[in-house]
Image (cartoon, rainbow, N blue to C red; front, side, top):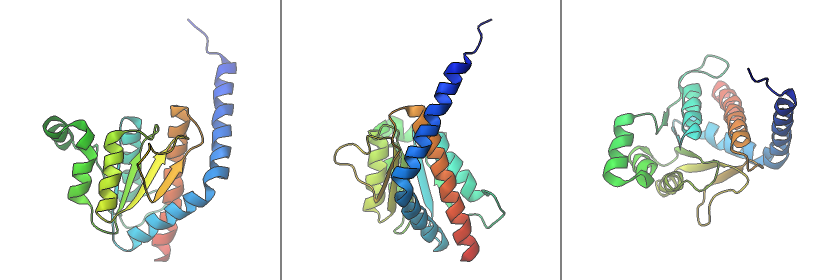
Length: 194
């Protein structure tokens, strides 16, 4: 039976720690600004719409679970929806209109002015995520993109772009989860105060 290399595990963990430190330094202001925007929208009665592909889809779903359920303390449920979770809608849209329109059509259907549309794409290039963010902006939502170091592809925009300073997908996803939890801290505080 092969033996796990402890040095490889330690190297991975050190790389994770470096990305975590770099993320805090690079994104502290943007983390606070996006957290305030989300908290303000939720306190005002608006909703969060989150979307991404693969691991990013599960992180969008994770955020929605924290908002509908709870993060640390019990509080009222907050309106949120993850767009990759309904297999009938996902397969219908992908089959009838193409995968690139998957989030765009749902954002168009669900978004009202003042809502928050959050797109997660580690590469910054996922066409369906970029189109979802564009649809959110057109509908009057606050748009937030979580990406890796490359940021968003040319021509794509969001009100808040949190580009984790790494090109390693696993480390980007790890930091995205931390960012989601930091948002939850701010949201819980705002709901408590409001």
